[in-house]
Length: 337
Ligand code: 5GP
Ligand code: MN
Image 1 (cartoon, helix red, strand yellow):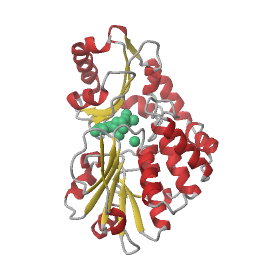
Image 2: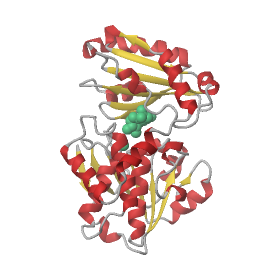
Image 3: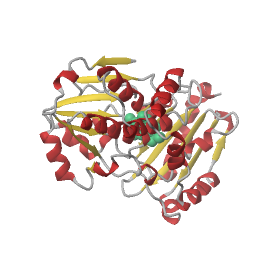
């Protein structure tokens, strides 16, 4: 699905405009890359911008250009609200439902301002006046690239903007391997490298930057792996105790679910991560091929995302969540084998 209704936006943006740019809770490479890339670009045009995130971000993204200017709502609520009230435009990037920003969403709903949605997730809600949405595109960073290069033809991309956009495209395509990666993706990547994105350095900064705690946690997740061959499914879990014992830090579990998906003949992979302070079990779903994890997450886990990568949550205990998951799976046997 594609929704392109950003006509007239550029003419309303001027050096007098105040713009806030928001990503989703627990921001990933695409959420941070797209918000920072857009913010740095607009700032260079003389437009006043502020990036606001619902909460903090993992260490492996802390090198991103412009990251120091990000305000986190959970730590600086009053300052964020002041910026938002003063904003003429609120850009929401890499999500399509205000609920994806946690508590910040409640405040956003009270604002009487123009919302702009740039996103690639399925089933958008309709809070935005301007939308650049395409669910076939691999990353929001690719859409920000499109926005910049079609609306501001005469502007050159800086190396900093290029690095931000490269990061989101790289992380959301699984380093250019998911089926959503197209020749166009690679052409954009080539352009970003020409503009100064240090591709090899970015890969190192993201993937060769592990804390020991992360590798120990990975060991635990691999120990907990359960393979349900009859359902072409593999899942794993980490309890709050596992996280505490192994010195968990935000971002440490990123990508773990892919180990389950890498098993031969497995089409559906899941990781369940207990979060005692939020009283939920956060869940990541991944699939290969036709099994639609966006639909699965929406139907059973108050979540969503994409066909092959989605997330959700359970309000039950970790143990009950796992039992319930195995039960739920029974009605999907035909789709999975
Ligand atoms: P991850 O499993 O890496 O956290 O997320 C996979 C995809 O699903 C991402 O595109 C992410 O934005 C989306 N996603 C993750 N959790 C949720 C959720 O609770 N609700 C919705 N609607 N989407 C989610
Ligand atoms: Mn994304």
